Image (tube, rainbow, N blue to C red):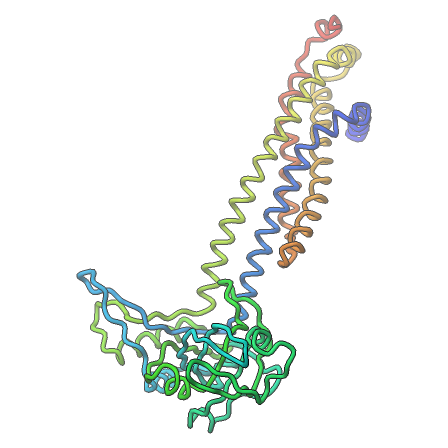
Length: 401
């Protein structure tokens, strides 16, 4: 019986092909919009997560920052010292540490110049931040210890200053300091915050302090936790150690900040997930609009086929059979619209992801959910017309012109 009812529904849909297509269009747009927007949101999350991962694996960053006294006034935030790096390197779970001091400096080579970030650090910085040397070499221990005027440059800085010329062995001027280029870093692209990670100059920390900053201050520490260690206890021990070294009284706020990439990833993922859910909810409204369109056209169909319904009831058809016929027609319309919408949604997500150069992510769960909702819409919005058809009085229906 069900198959014969389904066949009748398909015949009725084909008989009014244009009207049926326009009815399904609401479901096509609704399902397609949900899949496209949710997939783009998931792709954005994947892109941001990948960008954060580029900063370094198990990366922990320590910055001086203004705390607040109980009175509400800002407390001083002194910079770090070299002795702090030695103390932090002994924290259990810390694999490597790199002290960092940086400044935005005009860098000149020949008649070319650019303003870029010059960073004083150690060779450990490369491993912690997952930079690789594309050509040349990194600092040696003796160059770090003596503060030699040598430097590594990022891919963007190389292109801006040297173009196609090989920069290895050439000297560039950073502020009043001349340093010899000994290496070029492989490109990393933009960070999650949109900063160009290839627009930089790295030099030994001691050389930066002597020639550029003129102080022994350290602006921040970059630490790498061991692969099999959770960053939470490491961060807790770092905070305890720095509170002791910076003589922060109990009950007062820290005058430094400790962050790790996992925390940043959680924050960003939570924000993008909320935005994705919002976009999906907005798109889902069109499913309701499509359902209203199906209910409207099915009510029209019941009115047009009133005499047919009366004849069927008169020759013995039960009310539930008539109700099932119209309910199946409604569900078939919504399901066909859902299937077409899935195709358009996947195609739309693919086109947008390629256009925005982001990962193409389509969750099977999203597709199944959107398709299931489209079928449910057919049932819910098809019930009223089907119920109306099933309750028609056969005598009144036969008199209908």
